[in-house]
Every structure is written in structure tokens, then in C-alpha cells.
Image (cartoon, rainbow, N blue to C red; front, side, top):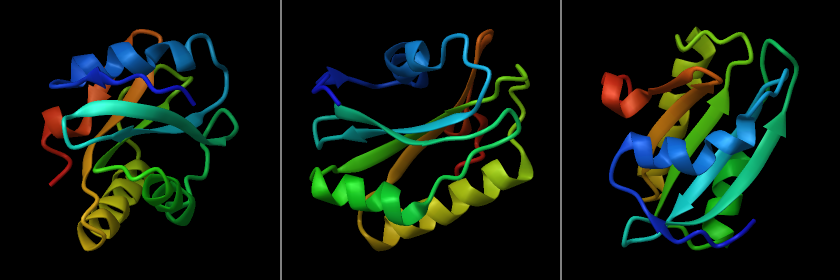
Length: 130
């Protein structure tokens, strides 16, 4: 957990910051990036490691880490070792649940990236975040 303090303005900025965490993994991992009011990433946190077909991301753990670290907002990221960039039904449902909780806590979820070795999909860019 290092203080990156890289300013982000696009999903590409996020991808460049987190992609190396997922390089050549054959299992799923779920990470969060904590962002301050100046849109700078203050830290990255591994939330869970799973199998080839999924991992569990517990909203309580995610928001506990964000609140403890005084984040202004959160970015979610996980990988699909299969190389498939399409979000699963559970990816979409989890994102909706986390966005809803974030709105309640005034801790918005800015984006959710699905990352493969070939590239990434941004929920915000695709309009799936609404």
C-alpha cells in the first residue's frame, strides 16, 4: 500500500496505474484504489483473491478500508484471467450494490475496471455505472 498520488482523469490513467497488479495471473483478484478530493490515487488495496472463475468482494471490507484511509472516492478493479472483457451478471450487480452504498456514505464509486492481459473495460466509459 504505497501512496501513489498520481492524478487520474480517465480510465486509461487508472488502467496504467493498476494493470501491473494483474499481469499474468491465472486467478481473479479484486482491488480498490482510494482517491482524494484532488483526484489523486492515495493507495491501492487488494481486497480478495479467488479462483479462475471468480472472487468475493465484501462491501464491508471495501468501505471499511476507504473510511479508515479517509478516501473521497473509490475505483474498483478486478481481472478476468479468461481474457473475456464482458462483465458478468455478478460483476454488474456487485458494482450497483457498491455504488449504492457509496452514495449513502458520500463515498462515490467512480469506476470499475475489468482487466485482462489484452486490455480493459471501464464501467464508466461503457455507461454501465449508472
